Image 1 (cartoon, one colour):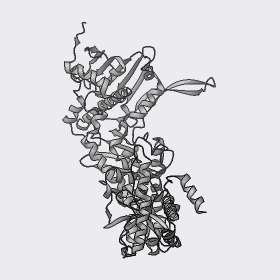
Image 2 (tube, one colour):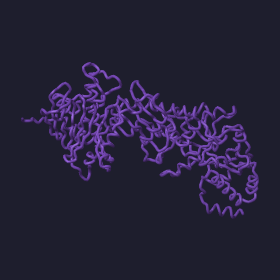
Image 3 (spheres, helix red, strand yellow):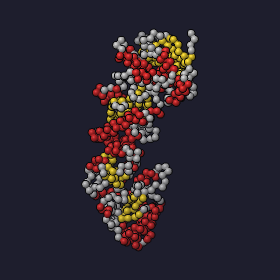
Image 4 (tube, helix red, strand yellow):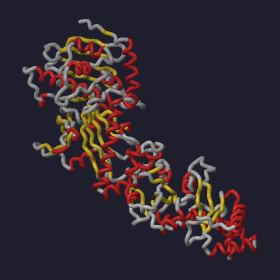
Length: 622
């Protein structure tokens, strides 16, 4: 019999080339696609059984089988599904991107949570990424005759009669020869195939069978030998499709461990099922500990994304905002198309709807933990709180309302972590602002001279010790109608600071000190905040002294300076000596001025501008 060779349509040739070279990032995806198609074929039998009483659908009779032949370099995927007629073979496989699954989905009403995975009809052609030749033998349900479809790529295909004992489809791939750049032999390796199936198709709802080698004892010879046994590779029922009532804490913890989400235990998890504008199931975990690379550029965020139990992406970053990037877990939706590239996925409307709901759920879970499991939340915040602060700063405060109630800072009261709400609720009635001190450690901030007046009045001070803290707070203009004020700022908003205490002769002293220091300070003035210390810095403008230190440590940040004001305590004995020196010894007055300036720098943790000159001044004073 002469077999006629048929040509793909011109656009199909171009699509085949594009699909093989562009759509799929990893060649191993081909096995996921073919197994998904096989699952679809069995689903179609199931749907026929729903409306045809003559068909008895016993799930145990349906399976997918994967076989290898090393000698002939072939990989075979067999299913016991609905099969295809000659016309269906030509219609579905002869025209790339004509999806039989998509058409079937339109023709029937899907029930019982089943869904047809394939949508675009290009998945089958992923086989050509690894195969020189693809052969399909299929016998359709209700037909006695089988048909063979054969293609070696874009040049075309043939269809001819064939024989097959049972209904269903066999797809045989003749693999390409391996080269230095590509290893195609791996797709004949039992261990590799098992790994790919577990990775992408573990939750296909029908058994995926394959012969597995095992080292066993032969009962007859009493010797150990390698034997092959056909085993089911996939687990079939994903945990997220199960009822929460039938799952225990150990089940969620074991799943966390099995998916290698971390070596720790999850601090909290939530199991959600949404059936609205977009349908999906998800299990989300908040880890106890941060991965070693969490605060590095190498860290990749994202949730595992499935479509009807088939893995689409190992890490889908679009499902999580950066400030919740610590969340691990899985999301499975029937509304997402399987055969789509990552680029197309980024613009998927359903994905964006899912991401929004997931974000809301994570926020609710964190708020619940803060309210009901305070100690656990404190430990969480010590690990991941910095990321929430980055979330406020990096989006210019756009996410302020979502995150501000989740923030915690160490406080001068009991040195415990407190929320902004807790701070404001216990403020004295006469306290006008939320006060904070920024620095690299709590121990240093506790000793800051600038805090003396506030402590005397019994005002609580928040300690900002993360580099991002002050930058983040600048994105929150007010919290519950209370503004934030830096203890080192020029204006603390207190009545005590409104008093004018500068006499004419002292005014001249401050002006002389400003002349000596020049551009190092914006001004020199008496202080209303100092009690026991002789000197401190205050800052004016948008850049605080702590922000200057942080920004100056960054590349290309030269010229970033805070406007510093040198404040002197007129009640301190040193001020009297300064006045005497100004009157009787100009040289010593200049020496005192420079030393007081250096003291203020040291108090703020700023480097001395000239350590040698500082040492010489101290020696001269001695």
